[in-house]
Image 1 (spheres, rainbow, N blue to C red):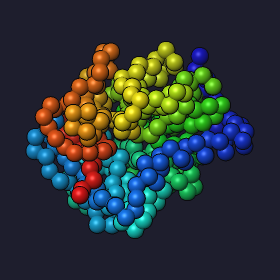
Image 2: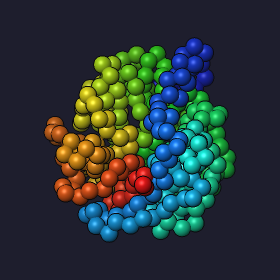
Image 3: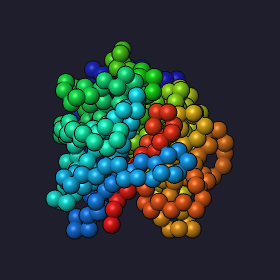
Amino acid sequence: MIHIFHAVGRTSFLLLALCAIQSRSLWAENEDAQPKKKTRHHVLWMMDADGKNLKELFTSPQYTSLGSPAFSPDGSKIAMDGWESQNGKNGRQAHILVINADGTGMKDLGDGAMPSWSADGKRFAFSRYSPYGVWMMNADGTKREVIEKNGWGAQWSPNGKMIVYSVYISGPNLMIYDPQEETFRYVFPAGEAPFRQFYWNSCWSPDSKSICTKAMTKENKPQLLTIDIDRGVKGIKVQYSVEKKQPSEDSTWHPSGKFILSTIHSPEEDIKQFYEIDPTQKQKPCAWKPGQKIEWPRDICWSPDGKKIIFTTPED
C-alpha cells in the first residue's frame, strides 16, 4: 500500500533530527574525503551519442569543482552545481550555475546543489545545506521555497507531476512530492524499505514510472537499482551489486527508455568508465563503448533528444 499524507504533522522532532544527520553526511562524504591540497579542476564535456566529437564545453576559474549537470527540457541550457574547491570549500558551499548549451553565458543563481528542471523549464527542484532541505525556485533563481526540510537529492519527473527525494522517517525511504496538489507519499511503506541508505542524483525513466538510484543495503553493499515507484518493494530490480569499488551516484536514462548510462569501476582499466544498463534484463552492465578511455567520468546527462551526452571529469 502507498501511504499519502500532507506536510503538517508528518513526523516528530527526533525523527527529523535523525534525518538531518543521516542525509547531511551522505552527499558530502566524497567531498570531505578529498584532500584540499590535491584539488583537481573539473571540466564539463560534451560528445555525440556515438562517443565521437568529444569537446571541452565549460570550466570555471572560480568554481573549480563541477557536478550534477542537467539539460533544460528544450536542450537550450545546462544547469549544474559548482564550488570553490581551490579555496578549501566543498559541496556544502555549492552554488547552482546555468550556462547556454554551447558553454557560454554562465549565471550564478546562488547557493544550492543538484538542480533538476521542471518539465516546462521554468523552475528547479534542488537541495540546500543552509537552510537545509529540498527546495524549489524559479529558473532565474527567484522565489525560493522549501518543500521538505529534511529531504535530499530532489529530481523532477519528465512529466512534471512528481519530485522524488530521499528522507529518513521511520527509517530510510524515498518520497514523492506532487507540486500541483502539494501532497507527499512514500515509495515504500514506512519502515519497510530494505536499505540502509538512499543516495542522490537518481534519474527518472522517460515515462515517469520508474527511477534509477544508488542505495546501500543493510549489509553495507552498494547497489544500483531501478524502482517502479507504484509497486514499492515489489518494484525493485537490482541492476548492479558489488562489495567494493562503488558505482557513482549519478546515472542517466536514455530518452528512448531502452538503456541507462552510469559510471562504474572497470576491473580491466582500474578506473571508472561508462557502462550501459538494460533495465528490462537481468544481466550485468556492459561497457558502453569498449576500448573508449575517458578517465574518471563523474556526473552524466543525456540531452533531451538523445543525441548528446554531457559529463564532468577532474582535470590533472
